[in-house]
Length: 156
Image (cartoon, rainbow, N blue to C red; front, top):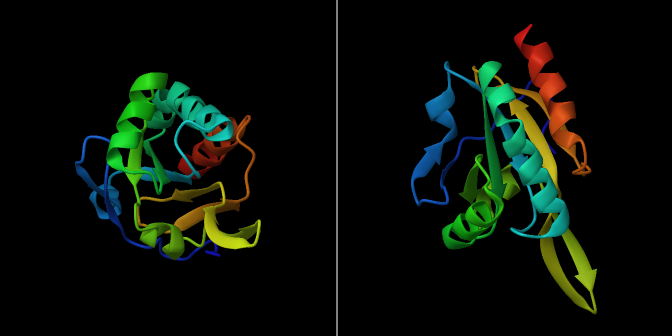
C-alpha cells in the first residue's frame, strides 16, 4: 500500500478513445484524483464513476483532474462512458501493471480458483506528484464528495 508523502508511481495508459494519458502531463499544472475500480458497468463502479462525473466541474474549479482506472479495455470503457454519459477520463490498465504499482490488487479465492481483483481505491496526487491522500476499500456512495473535501483542503 502506498503512503502519504510518497511520490506517486508514474504511468501512461490509454483512455476510452485510445489516447495515452500520462501522470507526468499534469505535473506542475493540476492535482490529480486517481480512482481505481473493478469493472465497467457494475453497480458500485457505475455509481462511483457517475458521481465523479457529476462533480467533475467542481474538481476542475479546484485545479484538479479526475481519472478512473480499471483493467477493462478501451472499447469497454468507451461503451461504459457512452451508456452512462460519463465525463471523467477512464484509463485502461489491461495488464494491471498500474494497479500493482498502486497496491490495489487483492487475491480472492472463489470455488477453489484464485484470482486478482481490484480493491476500490482513490488517491489524491498534488501538482508535485506526491500522494496527499490514499484510501483503500472505499464505498462508492458519497465518495466523490469526500474526495472533493480533501481536494478543497489541499488547495487551501
